[in-house]
Each structure stands twice: as C-alpha cells, then as structure tokens.
Amino acid sequence: MQRFIQSEGSSQGRGSGRAAARPAVEEFLRTRGAGEMPHPGGTLLEHLIRVASLLGEWGAHPDLQAAGMCHAAYGTDGFDQVLVDATERHVLAELIGERAEALVHLYASCDRGVVYPRLGVGQPLVFRDRFTGREHTPPEPDVRALLEITAANELDVLAHNVELADRYGPALHRLFTRARDRLSAGAWDACVRQLSLSMDG
Picture 1 (cartoon, rainbow, N blue to C red):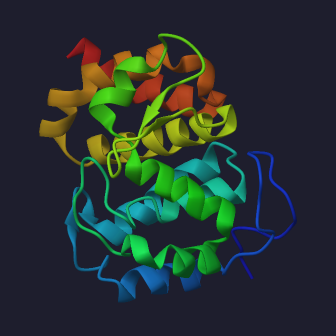
Picture 2 (cartoon, rainbow, N blue to C red):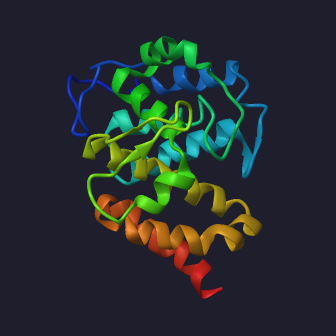
C-alpha cells in the first residue's frame, strides 16, 4: 500500500513516523469539499494531487509530499477557501503526521507580500505569519520545504492557466532565481524549463 511516511525521522527535519495511505488522504480532502472547488486545471483536489506528484518527481521526502497534498487545507495567502479550520490542526496531524502538518501550517500562514521579497536577501529568513502578524525565523529545512511546495504549487497553477502564466510568470522566475540555493535540483530545473518561457514571451 502506498504511504506518505513509513519510518521514523525525516531528511527534512522532525517526523511523526506514520501517516495515512495516500488514497485515505485524498478521500479526506474530498469529504472536505476539495473535489468540488474550482481551480486552474479542474478542481482543487486535482491540483493538490498534481502538486504532491510533482514533489515526488523531484525526490521530496514523503513528509513533504504529504504536505504538498494538503498545502491548501487551511487556505493560503492566494487562496482563501478553507478545508480544515485552524482549531482542527490535530485532525490533519493525525492523518498525515506532525511534521507534514507543521509544513502545511507554515505554508498557509506565509504572508507572501512580506516574506517573498526577503528571499535571497540574506539568511536566516525572517518569516511573517499572516494569521498572527508575528515574525520568527523558521529552521532552514522548513524554509527549503516551504519553497519546494511554493514552486510545485505555482508551476502547476501556471501550467493550467495561460493568463496567470503571462501575468505572474516573470515575477515567479525572479523569485525562484533569488531562492535558487534553497531549491532542490529537480525544482530548479522545472522552474527554468517552465518559467523561462514566460521570460521569453
């Protein structure tokens, strides 16, 4: 049976050591309405599945793939529909593991207008939580995981919406170029292949 997480620990940091099988996660997201929410390329659920698959292609740890599968669970700075309320964090943690859930929450809480311009300016990254307004410095593995999810999410959205690709492709190319040293080789190669077309256009 396919699982997101099968062993203790994580190359990305702390891990819970267990998680539901991917079909169970898909079913959970479906029961929360992801299969009915419109999204570039079909539905939100289809987008989430593709993001997790992209991360897998890039060699991401199962924790990170699980986080990618659920990255929009709490809503995001660019997508305000919520599948799981913040008071239910324990529910998602029990499903995909504490490490993966923490990454989902980090992604959801990212104040992009503040955080994105800081990428590539210096280390460590000072992160701003859009829910609380609090600033803190996440561990470097968390920043790298955040960027992997960001890359997979944005590339999938742009691949399924030409208008968004034309509008945001160049800015995303600049963002990921600044953050290149924090991206995996697979993520960076995908950014170059896809976003260079936006620059040429």
